[in-house]
Image (tube, rainbow, N blue to C red; front, side, top):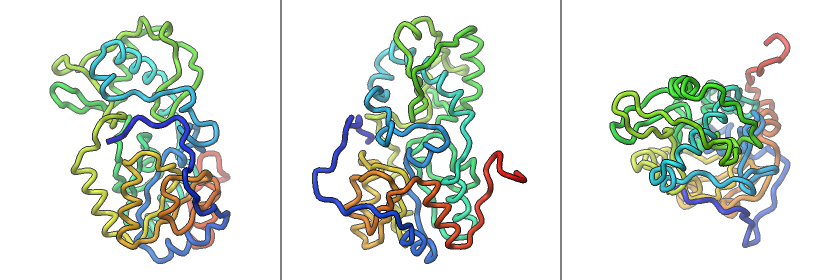
Length: 302
């Protein structure tokens, strides 16, 4: 279950210090069979903010819970108005150097898989295959009545038609695609129902307070069992949905390596924490391994 996040997680025990040497990550990847577990921190360089890192949004934003969403039409109106505006930012986001490096490691046979806690689809956009979306994807919408799954772009079109002229100015965009809007700005927003049965539509993501599907959790546990090591990228590991896989790897005697600028709840289980920005750290590792990383938009010759 994804619990409601705490606003300020601080270490309560002595944790191993971080290093700026990504050498251990290169060594692990050189061996192969590495399972990647990524969090919001890998997407910050794509313009999608983190909850807890530098400039994180938890101080001003509490993510929607499953209980609030299903229990209140007002909460759903607030969510869909804010998410509809935020989706425009998500739709424009492009993979960054970190995503492209992970895809390159996969193409060169260095990874056993990728699990992401993110809902932005940027790993797949960068070329990573068989990504397990632990918390689902904002690119899909599910009906809570009939179970039909449809593309988010179709819902976006219907919401545009139902809310012509809806152009509020948001104070910011959050990692869950939620824009910061006031109650007054969303008061007249029109929510549309399922086109098939008229039921309530929900983004195909795991809200805080909602349970990750058991079969998805078991699939991830199997990936951990089959991996040689676990590489955590850009996650504070504050909630159990990701931390449990770190604990599993440690219990099974598999090296855990973390790349995250700030301390995490998993540090005591880790061989090392590399305290560098993801793009810089992973491109450095790729260079050391001789793995070419695709150039991003705007690169020379790109």
